[in-house]
Structure formats: C-alpha cells, structure tokens
Amino acid sequence: MNIAFIGLGIMGSRMASNLIKSGRRLNVYNRTKSKANGLGSNALVKDTPADAVKDAGVVFTMLSTPQAVKETALGENGFLNAMESGSIWVDSSTVNPSFTKLMAEEAKKRNVRFIDAPVAGSKIPAENAQLVFFAGGDKKDVDEVMHLLEVMGKKVVYTGANGTGASMKMIANTLLGQCMLAFAEAVLFGEALGFDKNFLFENLTSLPVTAPFCAAKTEKIDKEDFSPEFPLQWMQKDLELASETAYECNTALPSLSNTKELYALAKRQGMAEMDISAIYKFLKKSE
Ligand code: NAP
Image 1 (cartoon, rainbow, N blue to C red):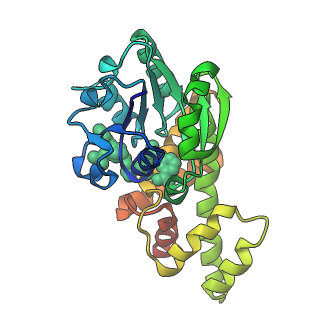
Image 2 (cartoon, rainbow, N blue to C red; image 1 turned 90 degrees about the vertical axis):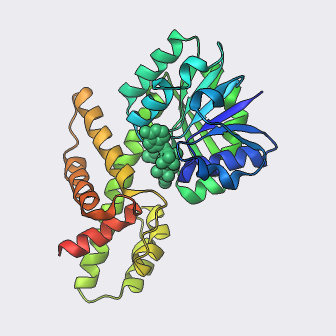
C-alpha cells in the first residue's frame, strides 16, 4: 500500500522517519521543502500536497493548526480532491473536534475515509515511536491502519466516532498546559523562598502531585535553553481551541481560561517558537 505523509515539522518528520525505518517508501510533502532533507531516499519529496497523495491508500497529515489543515487539504493544489476513492486520511494534527467533523464530512463527500488521530507525546516520544494515538472514526478503518500507527506509537486508544480523538486531545492538553504552568510557578516560588533550583527539581519531581512530564522539562528550565520540543505557540493554540470547544458544549473551563491568556502573553513577548517550558521564563520576567 502506498503511503503519503504531509507536514514534516518537529513531530511529522520523526513520525515519517519511523515509517521509513519500518521499510516503507513514502511520498512526502512539506511547505518548506528543505525539512524533508533528512528523511533519505525512501522519502519521495513532492512539490504539492495533491502530487503527494496520488496512488496513496493512506495519507497522514501532521500540521500546526486547523487553518493549515484546511489550506493543505482544500486550498490550491490541496490533497483532498486528489485522493483515491476509498483511501484513508489520518489527521494527527491537534485541531478542535468541530473542525475535525467538518474535515470528516469533506472527506466523505469525496468517498475518502477519515480518522482523527492526534497524539500525546512530544519530540522525543515521536522519535522513539512512543506516541499515544487517540483514534476517532470507523473502527474498521482504524483497524486497517493500526499496523502503521503501531510503527509510530506505543499505544492506540480507539475513542469512538470522528471527533472523539480530537476531543480526547483537547482534554489531555487542558492538563498539559496547566501542569506546565503550575510547575514553573512552583519552581519560581521555591527560588523566591531561597531554595536552589536543582534541590527543587529533585524533590518536586518525586512527589505524586507533580505531573511526570515535568521531570523532562527540568533541564530546559535549569539551563534556560528553551529550544522547542513542543512550541509554546501550539500550546496556546490548543488551549484556545479547548476553550472554543468548551463553549460549543456549554461547559466552563475557568482555570484554563486564565492559563491560556498567560501563554498568549508569553507568545506576544517573543516566546512563540520556544518550548512550552519557556512559560517559566515568562513568569520570571514578569516578577
Ligand atoms: P511544527 O514543527 O511547527 O510543524 C508544523 C507543520 O505544519 C510544519 O510542517 C509546517 O510547515 C506546517 N504548516 C504550518 N502552517 C502551514 C500552512 N499554512 N500550510 C502548509 N503547512 C503548514 O509543529 P509540531 O510540533 O510538529 O506540531 C504539529 C502538530 O502536532 C500541531 O498541531 C501540534 O499542536 C501537534 N503536537 C505537537 C506536539 C509536540 O510536542 N511538538 C505534541 C503533540 C501534538 P513548514 O515547515 O513549512 O512551516
């Protein structure tokens, strides 16, 4: 079966690389073509999204925002009209459930099967094929691509109909954004009370109240090296999308609302492309 992969950023390049390492040849497309350079000769680099999906049975997308997905799928040289009838589009981008349902409808109009399969896990889990997929769609379709998801991840959670994968991802990132902020705030609080950063890292990360991923962020905070694993601008985007989703289902996320505005301010202060742990830098600057 021919496979296409569209979107070779931090996550997509590593996911595509794992598919290639499993012995497959891929058609790939990225807006900035040079990002495909590291993938080797089993990645056939195409000039447009439409070119990439010709003859593909499965098309993966890993793009930044709903707008990016829409432009790449339905814009000039978009891939959706070029997909084979009966083929499967797996969108792993983090987008909101209502957007995902619109894409599922667009796909269906063209007799393309659609799976929303966003991921939990960042740059290193993507590299090590340790991602967790939240897969929404027809169960038979998810089963059909399971062997490919398993090449890129350690777990695939079937969540139900289209939109439920995206819903789970909104919920997970509601936790991620707030846990990162809470950890950064706690470390700064500790420093203000006279503790050494490394003493705080050691003693906070061993507590059950600290989210396990925070341990992986301590080196970045320590060295103040905020090179991106998960760009802060995408965290802010995810919290914004979660907030819109909460409005649509008539619930309230009061704590998330505050958190998302802090990430928005950090983004405005030049931290958009830094790692989410740069929220520490932002809070420190604001003291
Ligand atoms: P990234 O490195 O910034 O990559 C974004 C990708 O989207 C690039 O391929 C970029 O192309 C493409 N893109 C953006 N706007 C576009 C447009 N208008 N048209 C065509 N392509 C466009 O981001 P990432 O970290 O890989 O994240 C990708 C997705 O995964 C996001 O939805 C993010 O929220 C989600 N995610 C990220 C992580 C993480 O830890 N990094 C974890 C889980 C989920 P160019 O190269 O040309 O800019």
